[in-house]
Length: 118
Image (cartoon, rainbow, N blue to C red):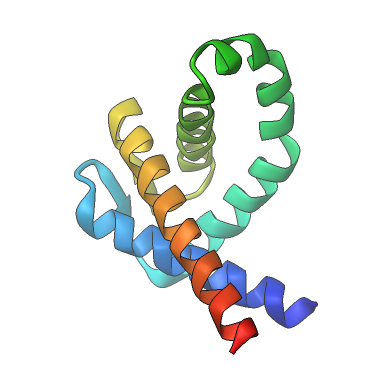
């Protein structure tokens, strides 16, 4: 539903702010910038990431799926070149951010599932 999509968008924006406060070289200037970055990241993950994933599938299989984090980091880095007020200073901050966003996503998905079951 639309409310769920908006909820996820806001959660992802908050996640970017959390990561920005933890990862050096990864920054979001304002909540508005975080909302825009989360929106563009969602679009990039929906449109660009699948192509990258298919093209790098042999590497992803060889690394037992760990290369997926590299793809996610590249998507974050790409978004930082598009969105003003969203700064990623290099690959290492992008990779750390990708790992943290994955953990936050796992946690929020689990919490949403728990709230639906209760």
